[in-house]
Amino acid sequence: MRSKGHETGRAAALVLAVLLAVGLAAGTAWAQGKKPVVLRHGHGGGVPSDIAPVLFTPWIQQNVLKHYGKVYTVQWTRTKGSPHAAAMLAAGEADLATLSFTTIAFTILKNSVPGGVKVVADTKIDGYPGYRSNVWVVRAEEPIHKVADLKGRVVSMNEFGAGLDVGLRVMLRKHGLDPLKDVNIVEINFGNQGPALRQKRIDLALLLQPFEGREFKKGGIRRLFTLKDAIGTNHMIFQVATNKILKEQPEAVRAYFDDYVRALQWYLDPKNRPKMLDVVAEATKLPKESYGYFLTQEDDFRDPNACPRLEYIQRPVDLMLELGFIKERADISKHFDTSYLPSPCKA
Image (cartoon, one colour):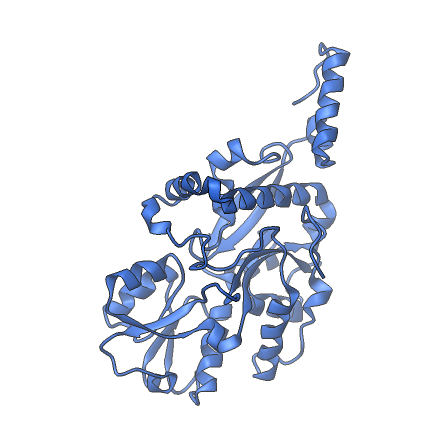
């Protein structure tokens, strides 16, 4: 809404009342005719596993969100993993991104993003009690029944330096294998992991949802270990913002997360599940039957208020130091700010 010279005082008062009722200061900028701020977001992982983009589909924008297109818009860039997303932040090509515990540690220690970054919101937690964990699988007929049996084999992950890469290397070390000498680690995107395993191009595949469910339905594969087995419950990915965007456009960032949480809670509401699955199916161009697991305990855990959990980031980062992946400790608490979320997070 924009005020016009011919509007009556009564209409202008009504506009002001609506803005006050919304309670978002960013609405003032929109009412004064300012263009929406474009937030550049680098996201990665399988959709809807990386849930952010499907929270902003056209139907959700029109029926659930309050601020999209008024206070802000989002320019999404899909990456193949968190190292790529971190590189976008460092190059000034993104304002927000989904990072893993590994890439936030490297980003902090290398001071690679001008002005720095902060962890600001949850995306998903791997291995949360009662929920799934990312899994590595082998062909059912192979004589690989323990991690040590992988010696001399070809094993895969999605991107070198990603959280899943470190998880794989930790598990190999735990079982007496040198990741550099005893196995051949290759990089394969999530969607091609299952086919590569069946084609015998690799001997160990990494499966995230929705690929995990699809591949197990086909049969012929066997679970070997999970990421939780390697590093415990962990914040697989979370949302990070540059200090630059937080300083220059705080109202737009708050509006974005207000909408993010509103959409997430709409998705999580059981009464909306039938429509939610239709929305996801339309966004991904796949049958909604493919997403029976989505936002259940067969999926990753997502905090309904988008609150990140500091301990699930710091603990695996400290493990990286213990095992020599990094040379000094990265203190995540100094780069952690949940004040841009609509509801307070528990300490």
